[in-house]
Structures are given as C-alpha cells and as structure tokens.
Length: 151
Image (cartoon, rainbow, N blue to C red; front, top):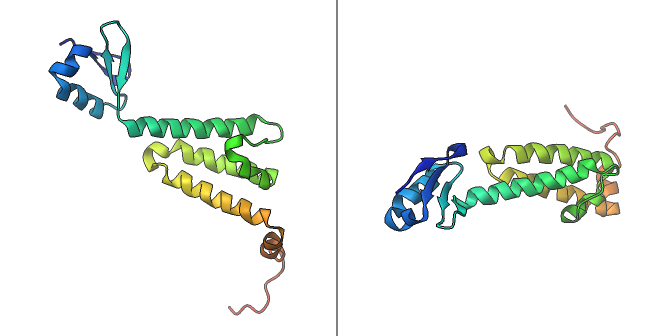
C-alpha cells in the first residue's frame, strides 16, 4: 500500500488498496472534506468522496452561474432555468440576485433549505404580479394613510 498526501488534504491510494484495505480508503474519503484520490493502474486519478458534498457543490455552482448570467446582462435577461423572473420588475430582479447570491454563499453552513425557501418566496411574488387583479388589490393602497386604526 502506497499512501501519500496530495493537495487540499486529500490522501492518495492505489487501486489495489480498495481490495486490500477498503475500510481505510472509504474512511479517509468520509473524513476528508476533499475526498480521497485513488490512482488506477493506468495512472488515472479517481476521486472517492461523499455524494451529498458533490451535489451541494453542483447546486451552488448552478445557482451562481444563473446569478452571474443575470448580472452580466444589461437588461437582466432571464436564464431559461429562471423564466419566472421575467414577471418581476428589473429592480426586484436585482434584489433577488443579491439575496440569491448571499443565500448560495452560505449553503455549506446552512444547507439548501434557505435557498429553496428564498426561491419559493420570490416565485410566489412573481405569481402575484402575474395576476393583475390580485397585484392591484395588494399594492393599491400601500402608500395610503391608515384609517380606522386604534392604537
């Protein structure tokens, strides 16, 4: 068994270690935040890591790609994955992007639930704006002074 440390705190194992010392290899993959590298006989490096970590990284990456795509567009054109944003005014889209990026940046600490809640709330706002009568009813007297209010 040849075990070496590689960059980012990963441990490098040979493919034969999977058969001989599979518990050590799998244990190292579970413990390391970067997974464990297994070098095959032909020299190919394979990464053994926790699936949920990879899924979470892909989730954040996809979300940040969408946010960057919105930010780089002069008119805040909406990516196909977020077409519901077209229902929001430009100022609201900008606010959404700010909140979305902030939520994505802390996914490692909070999980994806806060991001999903944020998306749900913004989608509900877009649905309200899509319904002209409901939107008018909810926003018509926002600036009107309150009457018949007892303090």
